[in-house]
Image (cartoon, rainbow, N blue to C red):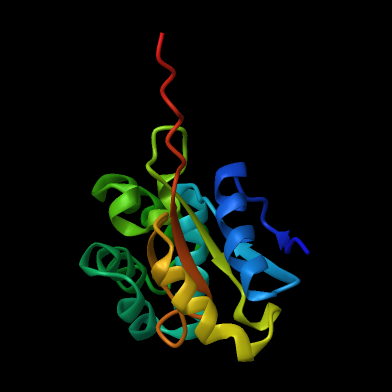
Length: 166
C-alpha cells in the first residue's frame, strides 16, 4: 500500500519522504493543506488568521520577526484590507521572507521543502506515531504540530543529488 497525499502537490523528493513515513504507519491517505508561499500569500494568510484567530494567537505561532508583521496589521486597523495586506507584504520582504515563515523558502536554492498536513485527514490514533516518525526521520529538519499549530508543519531536507565520479 502506498499512501495517497491529496491537496497541495509535493515535490518528488518530499513526496518520497512522506510516503515512506505514512506507508510504514499504515496511513492510507492524508491531505496536504499548504506548501510554498509567496510574500503576498503569506501576508494574505497572516491577515486572515489575525482576523479569525486574533493577533495573540499569531504572536504565539510566529517568532519576533513574524510579530513585526502582526504589528503592521495592528497599526493599520481601520484601513482597507488591500492596504493592510500590501503593507504586511512589504514588511515581509523588508525583514526577509524566510525569517517570517519557512513556507517562504521555496525555490531551487532552498535547502528544505515545507508543507502542512491536516491532522483531521488521518486517524487520530496514529498522530503520536506520526509525530515520532517525523522526529526520527533524518530528512525531517523540523516539525510543529498541534496544539501549537493547527496543522502538522513539516520541513523536509531536499535530497542531495548523488555525485558521479568520472
